[in-house]
Every structure is written in C-alpha cells, then in structure tokens.
Image (cartoon, rainbow, N blue to C red; front, side):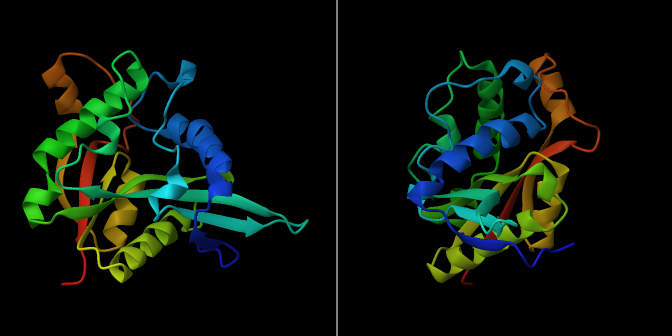
Length: 217
C-alpha cells in the first residue's frame, strides 16, 4: 500500500544524525548477509557519514500528530567515477569482520558485473543504502525513494544508475522500477567456494543481485 502522507526530499546537513542512527540501528541489523550484527557496534567512518553531501541522498518523512517531522526512510546515493574505488571498498577494514564480509562480497559483484565496462560510461549513480524504518514498511516507501532517485539522475543527465540488492525485497523494488538484473551471486555457492559459512540468510534471500537502469537513451 502507498502512503500519500510521506514526503520525499533531498537530504540536508541537519539530517545527518537521523541517517546515522537509522543506518546503525535499523539498516545494519536487518542486513540479510550478516550473522555478526548481534554484537556489531561499528566504530570509525561509516558509509552513511556525510551522506547529504553526496548530492542525491533522499529522505522520506512524515509529519506526526504534534506537527513534528519524522524520518521514516532514506536512500543514500552517490555519483561514482569509472576510475575511482567504490565506496564499500574504501571504508571497511579486515579487523571489522561484520562489515568486511559484506565489503568482500560487494567487491566480487563489482569485478564480475562492472557497469562502467558494460555500458562504456565514465560516471554512474550507485544507490548504496536503502532503508525504511520497521513500523513504516509495506507502504511503498522504498519504491518511492528509488523512483525519485532515478528521476533525479535522469534530470541531471546521468547515463546509468545501479543498485546491489542483498535482499529479495530490494530486488523486487528494482524489478518494479524496470531495472535490469545484470548479474547475481548465490549465497550458497559463494560460501561453498570460500569453504566457510559466513552468512545466516533467511530462505527468502538467495542471491545478491546487481540491477541497472540506463537513462537518457
């Protein structure tokens, strides 16, 4: 169901604290590809830090009964350059096991399904982190955030936007938006290759998938 009371807007500097809190308390703890989050209290730089400065990060908010604005979801987007190292490969270190395993998997996705080579572009928009607070899920907020990001990317002349979906729910949003799955990695096969059980993924989540939408063509 949709929620007409939810407004989507670009993130501002004053949204940083709310983004960080939601990222740590909700996004990370619901991330399907991590069994270490029970005791996960990350320190140092996070992918959510400085999110408003990325220029395309979006906030979903409602006005409560006391006329106060409340953030109910966010989408961190970043413009990536062809020659730059991707965000997830720069902020995670091996001694941070929880984040490191996600980062290692995302590096493999990058190497196998390189959007810059596939589409011969110099820049692309990465929809890095999509989060809806639990009590507002099921209201198409994630769909609206991603749809608005695609519209903004198109308005700004971007050629390609992509999203790595570690859950079946975000993958369903990508498909609904007309994004194309250009590659996937099975969690089961990945762990067999490594010879180690890293993830405790619910049965509904079977793969990490990269979705792409080509714009302005």
